[in-house]
Amino acid sequence: MVSRLSNISDLADLDGPVNLAVGIFDGVHRGHAAVIGGACERPGTAVVMTFEPHPANVLAAKSAPGRITSLEHKQHLLEGLGVEFLIVVDFNERRACQHAEGFVDEVAEACRLGCIAVGENFRFGKQRRGDVALLGRMGADLGFEVAGIEPVCDSGGEIISSTRIRGALDVGNIARVADLLGRDYSLFGVVKKGRGLGHKLGFPTANIPLNEGQFLPNGVYAVRVELEGESIEGVANLGTRPTFEEEESMMMLEVHLFDFEREIYGQRMEVFFTSHIRDERAFDSVDALREQIGRDVEAAKSIA
Image 1 (tube, helix red, strand yellow):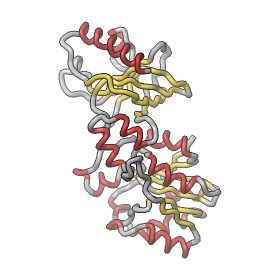
Image 2 (tube, helix red, strand yellow; image 1 turned 90 degrees about the horizontal axis):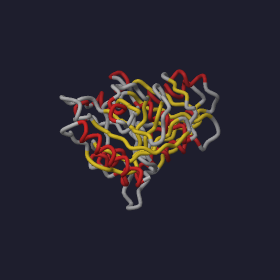
Image 3 (cartoon, rainbow, N blue to C red; image 1 turned 180 degrees about the horizontal axis):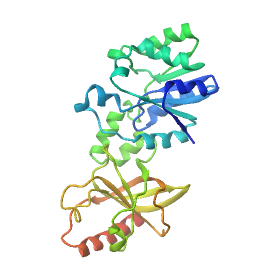
Image 4 (cartoon, helix red, strand yellow; image 1 turned 180 degrees about the vertical axis):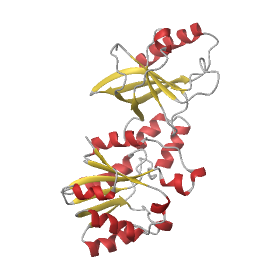
């Protein structure tokens, strides 16, 4: 289980040397995994340092990108990468104005720093003047190593990036997203009690409300769910339920699990998208929707 820290000063409580992987890590894709591996492969305590909110929301809110992974999802994904701790640094105007040297000094003073791993093109500090070269100079003076990790490329030789993943999500290219991530695209959250609409239709669902972010296009998908170590096949609707909502409602992920009857409200669930079945649309009647869901279930079962 990855433990979460909220202040740089909390690093003082960790057993040294502390090996930091620093970045935004939105999506925790293959390139991010390489940077994180640069910290995890060294003796000591492996820590991922990220920033909340995304710095773009502070520096250029109008052009800030949608998030691929929520903070909770990011923490969950780190569990499989050998990370022991996640430190979430509050990114605000004060932090944005901090000089790169001051940031490094703050971290180095807080703990016995063994290594800082970053992407080769990582920039930080006021006016983004901090880079791998600056880290190297300060590391030589302060006694820590620096791992500048080269970008990871896909099979076509293009650099893997969160921007490319967002583009693939926009057009619903599930296979491309999975290739760039290094795993099936997934959403993660806590199952909430809904209005019981799925149960009334004969297809009960586990519902996960979704905050603002970057998602696949609204639609129906064949999915695989990881729930308390168990893998379960199912079918999911990602969208706003236009048949029942008169106005645009919040995004919701509604998952019907095959051959499953347990109550799971309050449990955390990760939903992996394996195939697109159809676009989301409004139906003229509840009966028409019920019949279509039956066809969706059969389509998803044939894929599984």
